[in-house]
Image (tube, rainbow, N blue to C red; front, side, top):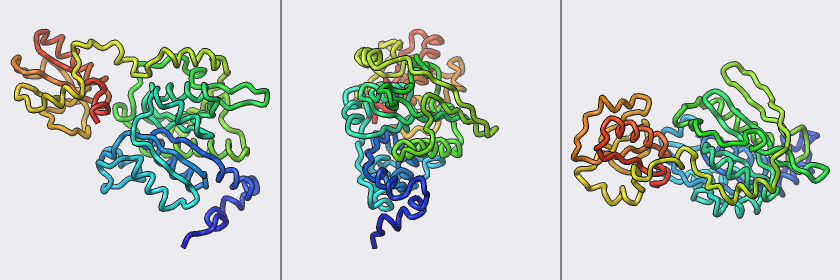
Length: 359
C-alpha cells in the first residue's frame, strides 16, 4: 500500500522549521546529482527520502567490487551493472513521491549546460578534478547553486557555491577557493579512503541542499568546510566572490576540462582504446596494470602497483609492445616514462584516458 505524504514524511514535517510548507518546497524542487559513487549514491538516496520532487542522476560507470566498502546502496548482485540505473531502481522502491531519471554517460563540456539548466540545484558527487571545475563553471554560467563535496584520505570538503544574493550578485564559487586546477591530487582510488568520511561528507552535502530549498539555517555560503575524521576537527575557510561570470564564461570557451597532467603527455607514447581493442589478439602485446583491483574488460599479463613500479626490475622482451593501463591514464603514463627511460628503444604505450575511456 502506498503511504501518504503525511505518513512518509511525518518526522520531518513535525519539525517546526520545516512543516508542511517546507515539505511542499522540497516536493517542488529538482536536483541534479552528478556522480553515483561514494558521495553521489547516498546523496541521491537521502535527497529522495527527504521528499525532493525530481532527481536526475548522471554517471557513466559500472559497479565494481572495490566500490562496495563505501558505496553501500549497491550489492554483490549489482557488479558490472550501471551505477545510475541500479541507484535509480533503488530510489523508486523507497521514494514514491520522487521522480527519478538517469543518464548513463559522462558529463562533458558538450552536455553539461543542458543538464544544469533544467534543475534548481546541482550536487557534485564526482571524484574527478576536471569534472568538478566543469560543473562549477557551468553552474556559474547558468546561475545555478552548486553543492560541492570532495575527499582526500581522511579529509572532507563541503561548500555551497554560486548562490544568488539579495542584491542580485552571486556568492563565491570553486575558482574563488582554488583558482587553478591542481595537477597532483589523486582520486580516492589512488590515495585510498575510509568509508566513514565518505558518508559524513555526503550527508553534509544533503544537509546543504535541504537548507537551500527550505530556507532554514545557514548554508555554507562564502566558506569552505574542511573536516578531518581522524581528529574530529573542522575549520571553515572564508571565501570571497572575485572570479565572476564573464571571466568564467571565457574560461569555459577555451578549456577542455581534461586532466591537466594528461595534456602534456607524449602522443607517440599513447594507444587509444580502439587501437588496443584491435590489438588484443597480438601475441607480441603485453599489458601491465599499474593499479590494483581494476575492473578490466581484458586480460592483463602483470599487475604492478605504480608505487612499486621499478623499471630496472622488470624483465622485458624487446620484441614485444608493452601497454600500461590504469583508471584514467595518469599512472600508466608515469609507468610508461619510467620504462622508456630504462629502455629507450622498447615500444611502451599508455592507454589514453585509462579504463574509464575504454568503457
